[in-house]
Image (cartoon, rainbow, N blue to C red; front, side, top):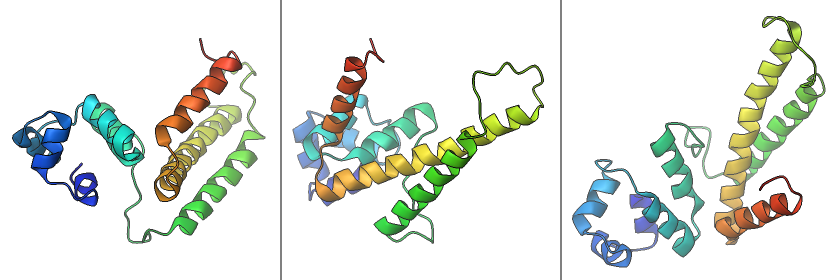
Length: 163
């Protein structure tokens, strides 16, 4: 949250006034002493179209989720992110061809279970890199993160895949 605030050239006091919170509470959120409440996350996403706080909030609240790439191999290289996503998608296409989720499996140690487990591992990478790609594109090209997800859910409702 601190990085997001600083990127918007706001002091803790200015942010506290904007969010109807005390400066001390903002300080504790930024310092990790307090969890960032969902209302703060929603505020940042709606006001600043910044998906990164939403992804961080998921990590904070549920203990897993999408982490921004920050290792020594990454230097804000969007093309590297695209290559990683393409690689994961290709692996997923290849492994999914060997998976049949409708088959009845009697042995937990069968080759088919191995294929299913492998597909799950690969799909984790696909989901991770796809989400990073989407967040990066939204941030760089000012595409509204919330609107994309709302439109996506509307499509799912219209296809009767959600109630």
